[in-house]
Image (cartoon, helix red, strand yellow):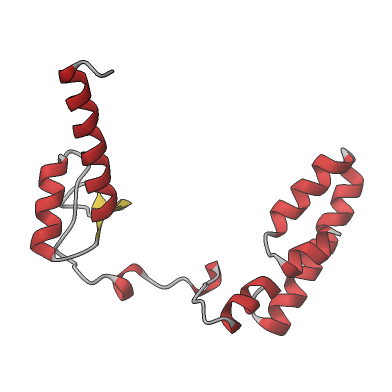
Length: 143
């Protein structure tokens, strides 16, 4: 069951852990793990990805597997626009406006530029709005 599920859905480790949780038997889970690995490898060799991902591709979705991940510099549109963890939301919104970007990378320092996260403008504005509303309610005593 785990081997078939791994071929259809993907997630070989997940299927192996489900087998362990279901049976509680390490030796049976080891056999299931071997079957899952063989099934996943065979599916990847024949199709390139799981059947579920194949169905999404047929529908026009652009779902990629980890094997198709590309380098950061290939998808980086705004190399000089970045955010740091010590910046506030006002600085972040200003950076979004300057870059005219919907999302920006959050880097550890401006010198090292090691990416530690991603912030979207929509998320920043939503969180700002929620916090403003919470503070307004506190100020008028609605809390």
